[in-house]
Image (cartoon, rainbow, N blue to C red; front, top):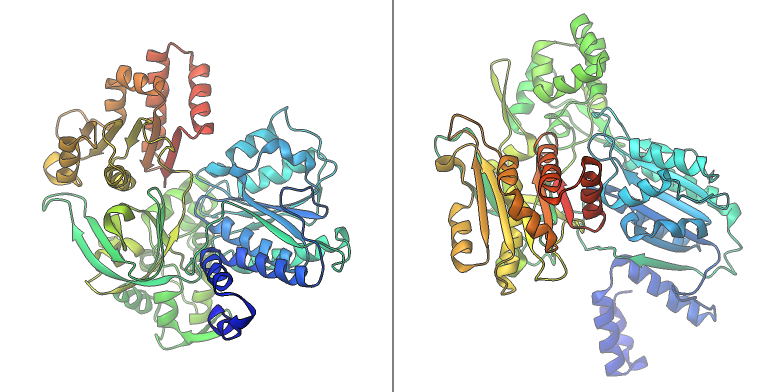
Length: 592
């Protein structure tokens, strides 16, 4: 029953009580509402509810380590299901969980993704390192389950989950059920794991009649809209902000969140669902000689092949498994050789899309076989380039159109082409993905160093908008890089205005193609090493956003050299110093 419907019985409550109840309900998340409902029901029945601060028996600890929010969503669902089943549940991000507390945990469910080349997500690094260290205690009292999320396109598929599983077992913990490794289409496997885990937990639970059910939340954020239920927003602007002669097509995109109630903080990302371009679908259908109206089934729902390819299946990103399957279908030995070589197939999928695969290596297969072969379409995450303190109900993105020549055809990225072609008023399905590991310092006087070449500058536009709205000046330093000053200086006028007003204290730029020798942001970091070290000594926080494969590694090396040269440290000490910055959240990265 809704509060509106309940109001007809408001004679049972005073006016002030009804007002307090309405205000409280409006502030609570769905998970918190579920707990309050259980609390009130239990109170009416005379069942005592323990406070979260008191020691509780039969507590299930649910931890999630998430880079893009998928692990968090699964963990929240599991926590809700467990609470409804009578469990006391403690739910938190791994970054909010003190590793030494693990020795006091009896039941643990861990949902963790793998980032980059087999690396733990930012909020799981500390727990990951602790379990691998000599400080880790024996965990014979612990029963656990691990759900690992990953992408089979990468060599170290689900590596972080595998690491946690192996270390927990090595420390004496007992698995409640075998680890499950999930690919990008994780929903069905995750739901099955959740169901089987609740069954496996049953022998460890006292009777539900005597259980004290509760749900303890640690810094979770929910809203009416999510990845599974995105908000249908309207595009306000999709404007090219690189020059006419630029080799890059970078767009400034503005989206209206209207009355959605969606809120975000500087550092968060916006998830964007998209449809594949109709002409791409038409070309693929022609190459494979398939009927667009042929009926196919996905998760028990029948639809046309055209609709499935346009809205439900990934066409612009390949996976090693797909390349291997395609090689077997076409029987080409050269493609089989590529599929069998990890390095070769990873390079191959960066240079090909499904349509170019079908063009170069023709195959014959049915409509249903094609759909079954392809991975589900997944949303793309973009760093938010605005602060709501400045733009109110809007959200801004900085989007580079992905374009690549493949066998004489120019191929575009799925989401970037969708946003680049978006017209004013067009609907786009979006959701906010919080990133609490990329936040401005709590102390507004803390110096901030921002390193963001190319579209990596997006979140720093949000940072400076926020600081201007807060009336803060100085203590900000931006490193920006792109190929050409005249063509690729993104948001140039805004940076100059911030410099003039004092919101931005210092700006160092690197335009790599404007001189004989290529100059990148890492070169500027080294050049300004002495001053940068002074900022670090003053407690500066460093933020890095952009390409993970090359830029982030080059910047990390440059920072290490600054610490060695100007901090007088050895290489090992410099590495330890930077690691301490990361652990203290003074070195934060948003790389992709």
